[in-house]
Amino acid sequence: MTQPQLSIVLPLFNEVENLNALYEVLKPVVDDLSNGSYEILFVDDGSRDGSFDLVKALHLKNSKVKGISFARNFGHQTALLAGLQQAKGDLVVTMDADLQHPPEVIKVLYQKYQEGFDIVNTRRLDVEGVSWFKKVSSKYYYIFLNYLSDIPIEPAAADFRLMNRKAVEAYLSLPERSRFTRGLISWMGFRQAIVDYKAHARFAGQSKYSLIKMLRFGLDGIVSFSSRPLRLSFYVGLIAFILGAIYAAFAIIQFFQGKNVPGWTSIQVTLLIIGGTLLLSMGIIGEYVARIFNEVKRRPHYFIKETIGQ
Ligand code: UDP
Ligand code: MG
Image (cartoon, rainbow, N blue to C red; front, side):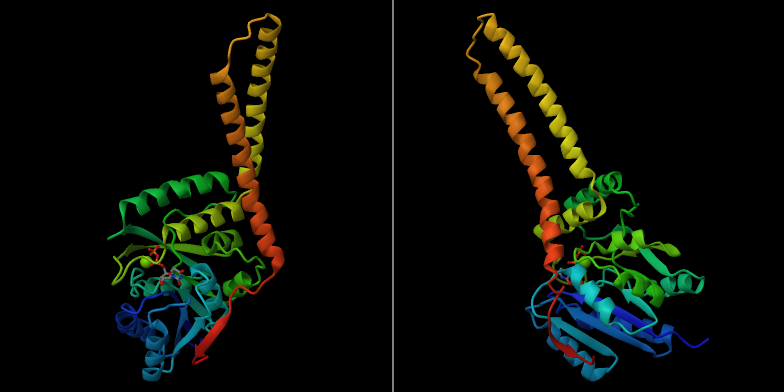
């Protein structure tokens, strides 16, 4: 069997302090595994710190380093998609560019591939230097997501995985724009394995996932993989309606009994409950409608400003 060509896809956003260190650790591992038949593909997600200049410099040193630069920040999941679309290898590994995904683990992913798996996912055992808030919110988010969703989604999963060509093509054939990659991969099937790894702290810089980006990512996961919130809002609305009807009957009886007490508290409580339920349900519907709108617009996922080595 000939050596399969290996593509490493690295989305990055303002990672100028990490790129050289990452390259130094990554290159020997990849060189060794693929006997020199590899490409390292950086997808610059609209960095403003000169990250792409560094990618160009790395390309001059080693022509197997390639790069795509987005016209603006389109988001991590979109950068992953672009990388998978452009990668030419028989095997594609996606990983973060901040050294949180240790390059040595690629060897373990490769072993699993040789055992006959199409997709090798990873699960982080523990993360150094991650805030208490991120750990707790992520843990409960995945419990909630798994409760809502029909397909299982591994809680500590990362977008650090190996896919063979067959799996990459299958992934690329999915038409949707809202890309919660780890959910889509789980949904796809094929022979999948999980490898545990110990995540390091970021080599340099701060997390590029702001609270807003995390929230958007989290909502995407829920809305793409479950329609249960829509049904849930129906039930919550139904319960509020029944309670409201009982209370209305009670109020009418009181009216005919002439016990017309000034009902400030009860009116407030009813208004708040019903108003809150309505707004909540509308918000949930809004999230789905916004995504339908986004899908029907059929805009391109991203624009490329510049490429190097492609
Ligand atoms: N990233 C990206 N676009 C973004 C945010 C992040 O390409 O809008 C990249 C980032 O440079 C890194 C990877 O996605 O290579 C994971 O992001 P980060 O390390 O900030 O997330 P965390 O590890 O804190 O969850
Ligand atoms: Mg990180």
